[in-house]
Amino acid sequence: MNSTFSDRPTRTACHPLAWPLAAITTALLLGACASPPTAPPQLAVAEAAVQRATTPGTSGDAPAELRVATDKLAAARTAVAAGDIDRARRLSEQAEVDARVAELHADSVRSRRAAQESQDAARALAEEIQRKTVR
Amino acid sequence: MNTRLPRLPATRSALPGAIATACLALLTACSSMPAQNAALDQARNRLAAAQARPETVAMAADELARARESLRRADQALINGDSVAQVDHLSYLALQQVVIAEDTAASRGAQAVVAGAAAERDRMRLALRTREADTAQAQKSAAEAVSATRTAQLAQSEAATQAERDRVARRDVTVSGLEAQLRDMNARYTDRGVIVTLGDLLFDTGASQLRVEGQPRMDQLAGFMKRYPERHASIEGYTDNVGKAADNQTLSDRRAHAVMAALIQLGVPGSQLSTQAFGEEHPTASNGTAAGRQMNRRVEVVFAREAGDLVSK
Image (cartoon, rainbow over all chains, first blue to last red; front, side):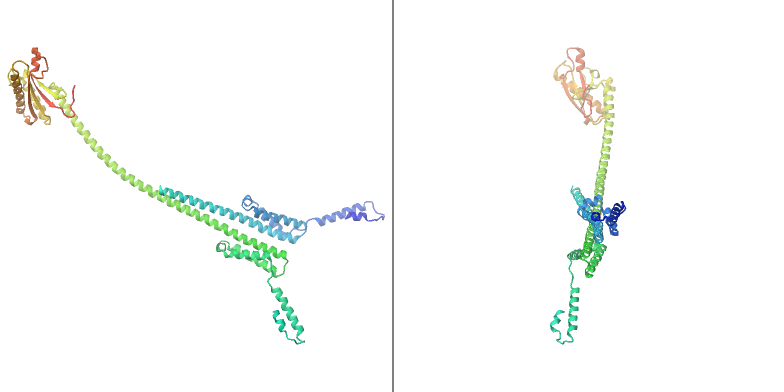
């Protein structure tokens, strides 16, 4: 953009530093524009939720679900950077609920496994008792 | 509603109003027409399915209520004509709330199974322990019964042993007494039994009358036999080879009888005694010398062997 300015055929007498100053000012202004717009409050909530869900247990028992949550959080950050606050808000809300889903899914996997194990143990015990009785 | 259009009155003045009414009706129809959103439908179906499962309703009632609230918001957004993105978003949240309810119900159900299985294991262990205790008790009782029987048997056996020991001790006393007295009488222990020899000196030559000098020896024998009435004695007469054998036979018989008569007279039961005459048979020494012939003239009192007697020395 500033190249357009520089290409302008202006030959009016000026201070020698006028051009560089203008360029710097323009760059600063543009930089201000490019700086991330205010992130929606939901993003912080989502970040906390995803962080809480990111445990070895969840990674082990609900990796796909956790991946959805982290991906969505990343997408929310990208949306914030792109200035699409609405999209960032939605993605944050989704990432939060996805993180919750990942946690609870891992819980249910673990619980089901524990149930299976305890049923197996009960069966083993019953068989042992059966053998002892027969003996 | 638009079925009313053909029946519109053809009056000119009413026509604009009718058209307006129709338009309004059409608009209303449009707005009341159920709007479609795939994500919302999916969430609604999933919620309906979750609510149809009694275990989910029982185990995750709060989570289902939250899911219903989320779905209501999504429905509202659709009705409000919010953007598709917003409706999709709220539908997604509702769907995930249903998933949360499902997983929560699954977790709680599994936990209940774990608790139930633990309780079942405890119950089984208790039953096993009870049975083991009962068995042990029964075994203990049985063992105690056996033990009691054994104790009784042992006592009985000990009593028997003691009785036997006493009997043996008494017999030992008897035997030792017997032995001492027999020793006094120069008894010999042979395979036939214990033999007490009454020498020639007790009789006069050729006579069967016992000499007075032999009386102490006869008293001793009689005393011994009365003390041991169970012991049978055979009184055997022998001679040397001087004279006729037939005479010696008779003499030995008479001497044996003389001894028996003397013993009976001293109170020994006749049933305990018997006699035998051998004459010049079975000499104990050579008849070639006077000393040998004297040794051959004798009466032997033979006590039959009994169990417990010393055999020979």
